[in-house]
Amino acid sequence: MKLSVVILAAGKGTRMRSNLPKVVHPVAGRPMLSHVVDTARSLKPDSIIVVHGYGGDTVKAVVDGDDIIWVEQAEQLGTGHALAQALASVDDHTTLLVLYGDVPLIQAQTLKQLLRFCDDRSIALLSCELQDPDGYGRIIRDADDQVLAIVEHKDASLEQLAVGEINTGIMAIPARYFRSTYARIDAANAQQEYYLTDIIALAVADGVPVYASVIDDEEEILGVNDRVQLATVERYYQERAAWRAMIDGATLVDPSRVDIRGSLSVGRDAVIDINVIFEGEVSLADGVHIGANCIIKDSIIGSHSHVDSHSVLDNSIIGEDCHIGPFARLRPGTVLKNKAKIGNFVETKNAEIGAGSKVNHLSYVGDAELGSEVNVGAGTITCNYDGANKHKTIIGDNAFIGSNTALVAPLTIGKDATIGAGSTINKDAPEGELTLTRAKQSTLRGWQRPLKKKQK
Ligand code: UD1
Ligand code: CA
Image (cartoon, rainbow, N blue to C red; front, side, top):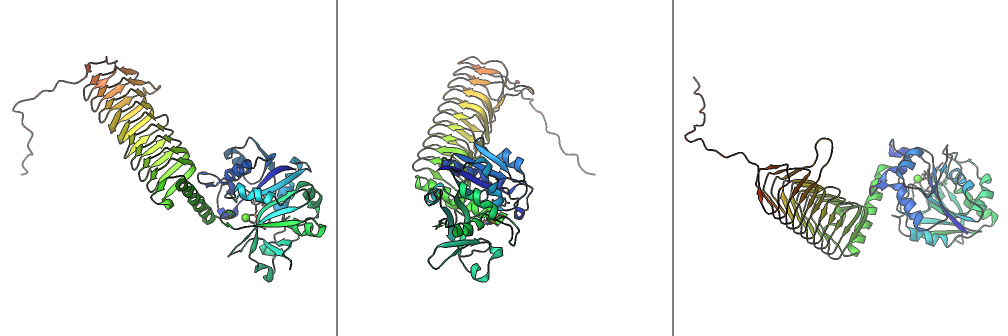
């Protein structure tokens, strides 16, 4: 049997009270639908079909999905009707695995187990025992524990409402059976919708076996209908991500105060202080320390480097034993070689800082290439932009740039050169020499400060 994952995502999500389609609201910084698509991909199915409706173009624009078959459900007439829209894209030798775009935490492992209960002549569904089953469809079983039907909350009798076992919505159905049976599903129910769940009672009547696999972890199957549930799902996701980082060998000073929006890989004995946000792909080698309140995005940090509090790194590559911050801002294209130091209120962009070089205070280094053991004094600015184009500054090994220097690019400072403090350098400075621009200092002897006029 081929496997086709069908993700139902056409609903508007009225309870979100949003102008955005529900499934593009982010969980861990990415549209919730993207999480479901990733999980679907990890099953290596023959196809992934997303049934979209409300805000379809917005959904397609934000979900990366060259491999997705997008199927439109123009009117939201129910989950059965939604699944029927996918039928044109699959043949009869296919198992349909139905997922929901608004149930983003479902795990591939759970789905693989569920698929083992479904073959070309049986249906498998995922159920869960809930303390509070309110709102969900209930699994109705007979005295022998065989599944008989799913009854929606709005259609359930008092006796049925007392059932704690609910339908997660996740189901595996042979396409051939669904194709031949769909016409028998009607909309004679409280919501006047074509319920996918009606297939269960029909299957039982037809003698098609139905298996319900009960999942213990209710966090995995939580759906997002409003922003409160969105926040709950986000916390579950974060707890899991923090747990993974700790299992991999990082110390999280408080695992409830770290946010991982993407993938974080950690070496042994990495230490992450509170209120740190990781975005995109971040890798921390052994012994890296991240101070409180840092934001680190798409960066690689080499072993035993320290990023002190309140620093922001974006698309940067940091070598070993480097020291960054507090209050540093490393913008895209920053590369620090081993033992380099970037201090407080320093901004770098598209800059390579050589081994052992230091930019310790209040500087801007952009479009620059610094050799090793360079010392950049406080308040040094690379003037890389002339209002139209960007230009490069190259500084040789062991150069010393005095404080408050403006380096007007394009510019090359030779190795071992010294630049006097307060200079504006717009011509190349030769290696090994002192270069400076500076108005002569003078003293006016006997000069008096003005005095305040006496009030009459
Ligand atoms: C559904 C199930 C219910 C289950 C619950 C689990 C049905 C009839 N009910 O109820 O048994 O307990 O999920 O969360 O299946 N969708 C479409 N097109 C539509 C209708 C829905 O694509 O016409 C999509 C929605 O975008 C959503 C999913 O299907 O992703 C579920 O729809 P929703 O209306 O939220 O169903 P529930 O009433 O929650
Ligand atoms: Ca729902």
